[in-house]
Image 1 (cartoon, rainbow, N blue to C red):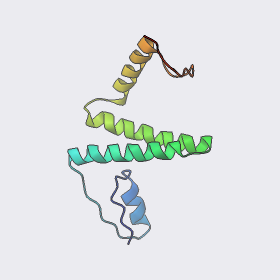
Image 2: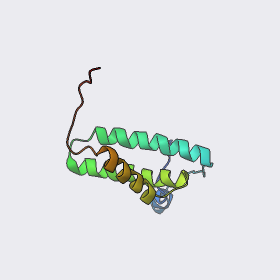
Image 3: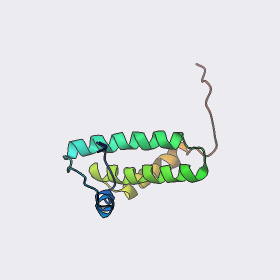
Image 4: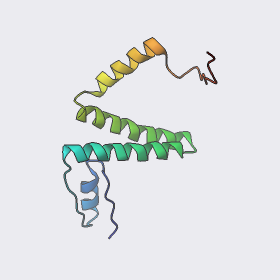
Amino acid sequence: MPTYNKLVRDKIPEIIKNTGKYFKTEILSNNRYIEELKTKLNAEITEYQETTTDTNALEELADVLELMHALAGVHGTSFDEIEKLRKEKAAKRGGFTDRIFLIEVEG
């Protein structure tokens, strides 16, 4: 039986059960949950970086976004609050749409 030892989406056990396969899960403590969310976020970002098509990139970005929603919750806020912070930072410092690549600053 393959061993995964990774955080999975909430409906994965139900999906596995519907295939008639045996599985084992555990409910994580809050600290371990945060660690596993961070691990999963790194994995999804790596998967995004390795994509070669827009379709695959969008799928991976959707996974990253889902993890951001979960991480907002464990840090005691909502994704809407994070979006508010993002907008405030963008208003003060700009976004990344102009493709500016800083080479150096003298003195």
